[in-house]
Image 1 (tube, rainbow, N blue to C red):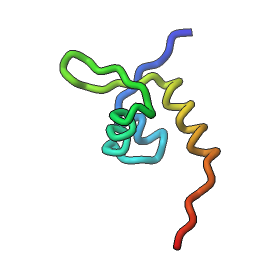
Image 2: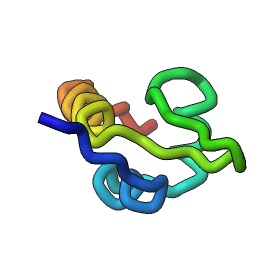
Image 3: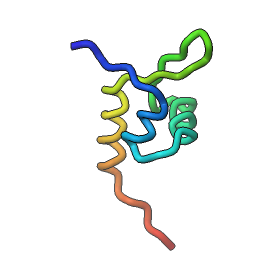
Amino acid sequence: MKDVIITPSVVARLLGMSEGWVRYVALSGKLPCITTTTGRRLFRESDVLALKEKLEKQPAPELA
């Protein structure tokens, strides 16, 4: 099955985060991305869903 390629805005909506956070996570290496020759980042849907699952399993931080 061929993987679907999605944009940072779609990733942000899927994860409930901002596009800035998506860029940060991609730059930190926690979310693999494809960088085009023009510098645009694109993401494999399977990588995004795997990260979403990992984030959902983490305990919520306690508020002080």
